[in-house]
Image 1 (cartoon, rainbow, N blue to C red):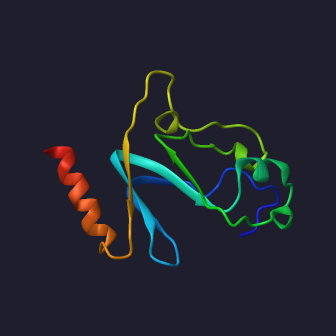
Image 2 (cartoon, rainbow, N blue to C red; image 1 turned 45 degrees about the vertical axis):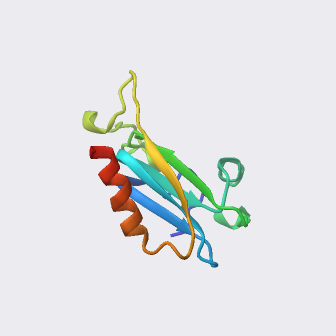
Length: 126
């Protein structure tokens, strides 16, 4: 669905791992020590901030990966009518928050990312 005003988008919650692979088979594997939030896109945050319509976005060759511990929900204010903020369970409270992850490059000859993920996860519990 095209958004009238592009904004932060594409965030995935409860991510255990993800991989990005180029057409020639080389890639990077991200494995969270716990659950992560992640988004991947061909636009910078500045690109999204400056655009008022989706057609104003020019797809970049680069891929931008965003990793987060958590994001607060929007509530119903995202459509601009009234303001009922997010429910309490969807707020990120002030405090010390930590999260960790492993970035592991891989080649086309190393096999399935799933096997690499399992090996890394086994190292977390060892």
